[in-house]
Image (cartoon, rainbow, N blue to C red; front, top):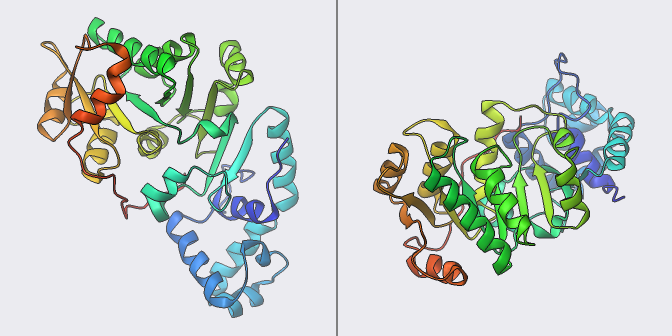
Length: 330
């Protein structure tokens, strides 16, 4: 069981909804508010977030130049530390751990690509070392035609046989098909969830993959958070930003999470985005190719072991760049 440092606990207290009742008026700091706090901490001479523990309202106002209302909110958030520690122990017993942005084991690709909009807190179950290892993100809608299903299976299987991590969102359809194919090929996967991590790890096959250290489930939301459109939209970029390449199997046109994540990534340039192209492809696929997505055909025209090389040679994007866009905490 890995318990977070005191510094990380303070980050959790201030930047996570963990232990905050749904009907409470108290809210964690937004990403923007946290970044402001970090700068004020540096300017004040306080060494780290943990130095905030024990400070009263007047102390916070004096050291950090916050209003009384802001200082009261910070102290209320920090007062949850005993409840927070109990909650962390509860989840640790279930195999759920936490990592914060200031820790060494936090995924470096999030820091590099998302900068200040990288999520403050990640809850995970499984092998954290998989996050950011060379791999391919596979995304798409829940409803697939036969070509889309075959493509998802092919990419997952190829990742498994080639030692590449299969990155997905852990949802039904493309995500589950490609991840299962990777695991069946004795490969590895990382699923960035927009639904309950606590519930997902109860699945027997998922448990076994986690025990083998072949799978990591991760989410920027509390482990008991249910699915919503907002959580799905917020996590989409997190799938792309862990990978080297992305393949969009099926997308609706100008709506839905797959479309939003693909267009955001095309604009930001985090990774090359490939789009499954075939005669009966969804309209969204066609439009994404028009927006700069790189056509990807199925059946793959070469031996499966050449997939990574083919993706590299056919990438038409420049070096992935960071984006200043802020990701709100939900």
